Length: 327
View 1 (spheres, rainbow, N blue to C red):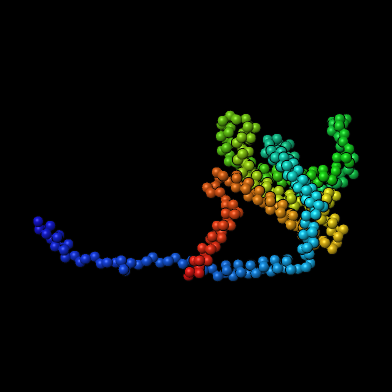
View 2: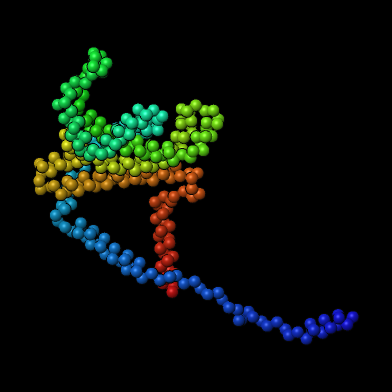
């Protein structure tokens, strides 16, 4: 009883709890770090870009009215069509040759490894223009091509001058050069597959060909396809060299029209520049979506599309401006 009474007295004598609602301390507000250097650099870049654009628009030397005249002329569009045709054929043939060379480099045969390595070393070392000019003058070395027994009779004979058209020379030269680079892309993609995948496929008793087609190649394509699409951008620009083998592609057409109309050389070069920008930009868009497709399963979140990235960037910029102006 005494303990209960003492507890009751102590509770009764305890002072009432103070009302702290009016004295509540708010947490400190997080202030964004000021970055004046970033704003200064951004302002300088904006001024430089504005000056460049102003010079492009107002300089009469560019002759933008002549640019508009030449941009969609039938001769230019015909050259553009030749460029697209050469690019498509060279890309397909170069990729097929690259696959064969990569398999040769990874083969167990020392002969195939040596030949594949020598081919890749040679065509990666020799400039493309040299390859094209050499093929253009190939008929001076070999008037006829034949298939048969070495140092023996020939079964089939071809006239090299009839086969070596301008289009054939351009496609063969670009394909030979492209195959050397594509082989390294394919070989790197195959080597990127984890060694455990090979061991698991071998443990299942699958034949070597089936292992490659169904297990190794699908995983290697995640690395091969985006890199080879990137290689296509260089191939589009490399087609400008076929002008030196008398094939009038986009650059060849512009060059010949510039010789005919010397006063329009600059507008014609701008026409070629804009068309190459359009072609490489289209390939870059394809590259982005190919990389995004093969990123499934490898990353938790897929890369944002350019439109979504633009929207999120504008939203983030607005929020940042509001925060800094509020301070």
